[in-house]
Image 1 (cartoon, rainbow, N blue to C red):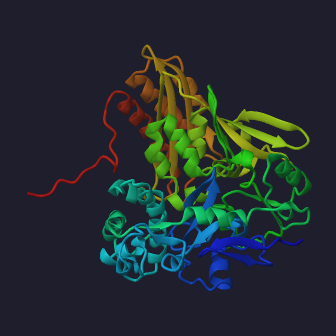
Image 2 (image 1 turned 30 degrees about the vertical axis):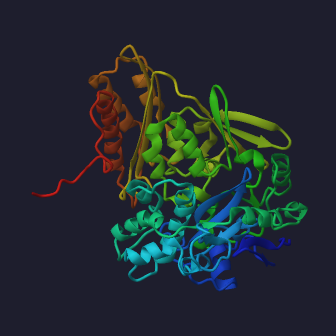
Image 3 (image 1 turned 135 degrees about the vertical axis):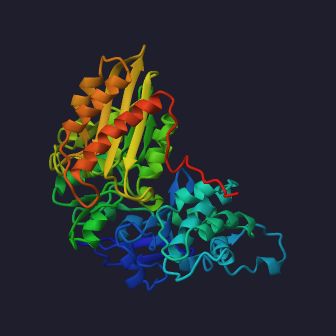
Length: 503
């Protein structure tokens, strides 16, 4: 099998690379093929952010920027996009001063505001993490500063949560994030970038039957490719498959990328439900969900870091079926359904919890793909809370994830939907606990009895994240926490804790 040349835009010029294997990562291409060693290799699993780069992609006639981890991103997935590395910020001729009327001396700028702010705020010591931080700052600059939006401390903390610094500490880096807007403005010449990107669009070769990297642009083409190549490794954002490449050293001779199919990249608003395409990024999917359930904002931002959410997809997280994936307990509690499709049999729809048959196993046939998730809109009586317990507050994997969604009217639980993660071989629905709650008066006694049922319903294992006994204890405690919050008890977390200065 052959691969079409990999093409992307860099510093305003097209880059074309031939014979790039389908499972080669973007970081490998940058460091080993192009000599761009400013982009660092750290954890190799999307945790530390040292390898962060920024991608530019045309969406509805606008240029959309995403900071992503290049270590777990397949190189061919950036075909047809614009790419910026840390070396490009002061070298790209399409990153230009905002004020064209300023004196020539003021236009002689050697560093981008993201870089200059790091220098002025002393945000770098050993420097290994600095390129990744600078690129996350660059993405923040383009997405916020260039649109006249202020960068608050809270926003900076959220969008830098996927970047790890071991020596400087985060205060000067957060200072740099807020200082960027006060420096002489720079901006990408987006109209010119969009014009150049038109020349890099996919052609028919991308869907050739013998291609090693197949990226169809429509759903019918995607399902046809799935039927024709059942052995191809299906990828979306590759935030888990990328680990199989970097950590397990797996090799794939053929890859089927679902993220180019237009139908899978859409969020459709219907009167009774939200339809989220399987290739919608976690960033955009959570934005659609938090628009309906604002209380989910902090839970959503604790799903990995922003670079992972910018690459990973909701459909990929669901289809992957990891028992510690955070989106599935939430979707189970929201009573979501998944839609599977094949070229031969069309579509079928089923409750999300019924997708799984065992550890990372599901009911999908060899020619089927998950194409969208259907999430019913909230009811008037609904009380939704999502809890994530992990060793680190940000950018960590759950030891326990519990999402409770109760319809309470007239002091009685009319309906209960509970999703749990980290307590079984698959993301699970707590059916026994739901039954113990439904039709019961919403009282402390009911909550305590349900907590005991919830603790007995699962037999979680002990592993590096938590013991089984701890997980069972946490399940009961979280249900009691839900009861207290339903009675007006304020939620206590790192978000709500404040330190008073000593007098």
